[in-house]
Image 1 (cartoon, one colour):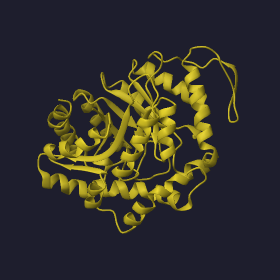
Image 2 (cartoon, rainbow, N blue to C red; image 1 turned 90 degrees about the vertical axis):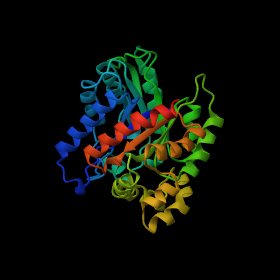
Image 3 (cartoon, rainbow, N blue to C red; image 1 turned 180 degrees about the vertical axis):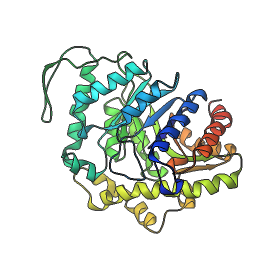
Image 4 (cartoon, rainbow, N blue to C red; image 1 turned 180 degrees about the horizontal axis):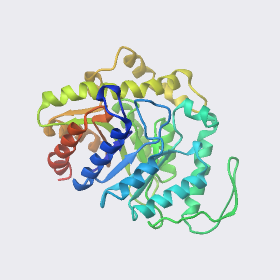
Length: 350
């Protein structure tokens, strides 16, 4: 099992820090992660979420991070493909791969925020088709030849997309997966799969089985799972930190996703599977609930190893750890990063 990190560049009011400090502290934490030999730092792309995420231009952040680090890979994703022209995506991907000297991983997806689609003038109902066409163009750009493509959403006539990636044939490609059909689609496209923290582990576990069943790639499947984590040597202190940080994180996350679940936007019909969980969440998000549903990992290194084993047993190959989930002070995040690197990862990889 590989250990990655997952960042939103959150800035909750209770941390009482400036936006500038949020960026600076995130860079410092990920520079430390490079020294501690974490595999990859993933940056999301979100818009219009005042406390939850200020990562609206993750490629710029990753470009800065590439100059401060030597080993850690840079996870650009997920890129909400319907919100961007695929030529722009290909250009940004190649530029980051050059700046990082071939350390880039790329995650794509549809996105899930109705306000983003509305502001950027995109149709959620046709988002899957837009992603499929965008992926075809991105893959064509890796061939280092002019690209011609005639689709429903995009048309290119002998376009020379520059620059070119350092990695050959291309950086590792991943897809976000939330609805059941997206897990199968990712496998059919021979993409690594990134499962988010949107729903209980038991549901993700079943979807992972579908992904593995549909996998027909020549290489082993790559399965990434995002989870909020606080790991400290003092269990009660870890619980205290997580009670505020992780509860806040999931509360903010569901502000955006619950309207999607309720209105059932076209082509997002599979979100109705979350109905049972939604009703529980309405009663109030708390740490006990999150731990019960396998959406949070909290405690001592020994506690965390025990909780992470269930992901490993289900076939998860990459844990995307949201350390503190954006709701903990940087000193605690860095302490937790060290604790995981020194006492959890060696045991999990033994």
